[in-house]
Length: 172
Image (cartoon, rainbow, N blue to C red):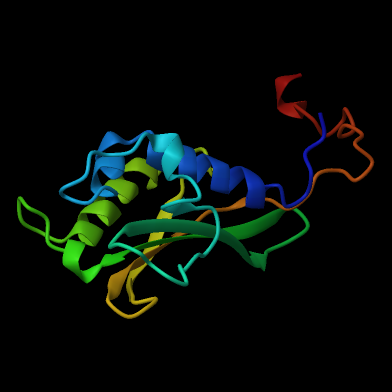
């Protein structure tokens, strides 16, 4: 089966959302203190988005997580460098956690524990590159986490296998 070039835009985002929403602590942190946590699938496109999203109007205080993928560098015909961004932001009234600490910091901690070092993104391990402050709209504060990976640049456009003299030569 041939892999489509730049499929990481689709594949990485789906993997990220799946990884985050299967973490019970992340799902719990997305709920307001007086709310029961929603079912994980109900969070997609309401509080968790596979693109950079900033709500136009907000009826009540909420916490959001968004993710996206850029290709920062094409290193060669063989490799490229995808960068994964995860934006975590919440209304200022929800920043303080009942048990102490800051909601966005805890979310970032849980997200990093869940995906940093993962082998589901690119070749090798996904690596945390940086964490920065993020304030998308009035009364909302958060962080943006940046992860880097390395992946294959392309598959043979013809879909043909590599020549036998190049594939698995070390096994013969």
